[in-house]
Image 1 (cartoon, rainbow, N blue to C red):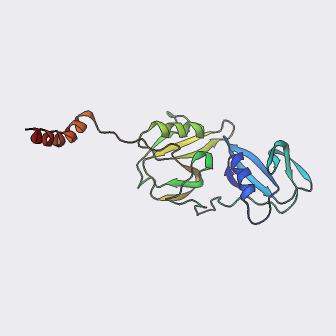
Image 2 (tube, helix red, strand yellow):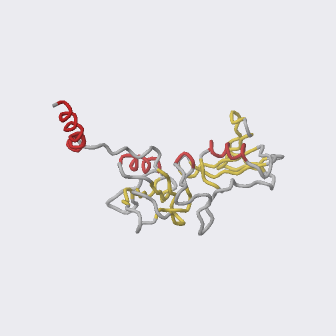
Length: 208
């Protein structure tokens, strides 16, 4: 199933074209991301401890611990198949709140990178939100990739990347575009003064 937020799951139901989606079920997997299924109808419920089911356009009355039992369920398009990038590409990588690009990772040989969370000592694991923060704190970080290692604590490994070319299939990682825009590089005081010198010289020349 496609991994995304519950809000993304609701939006996928509203925008689904193959049939009129009336219900959706969502299961948390990695922080605020999880599996999503869409349903045309919901004639009966099956008990399912991991899923919560919602009626489309009405998320105020969820059915916790149940999922629809009809057979026409689908997961939203976009999940990365084995060996593929789903609806992602090197030019189109999704942010954390959009679900990222599952089963992918930026090429480590072509893209400068740093592993900032690791399940091997002396480093430690982190949750995907911490991975996002570590990228935000690096002024050159454009993408980050996270791998779930400890399902109980929802912690795992994290890489931050300076650029992402190319984006490759990877069984264990999900790749995300930096959430905020990259900071603008400002000229230093000395450089800005040097840039202004020609204008000052011309002004003085015309004043004589």
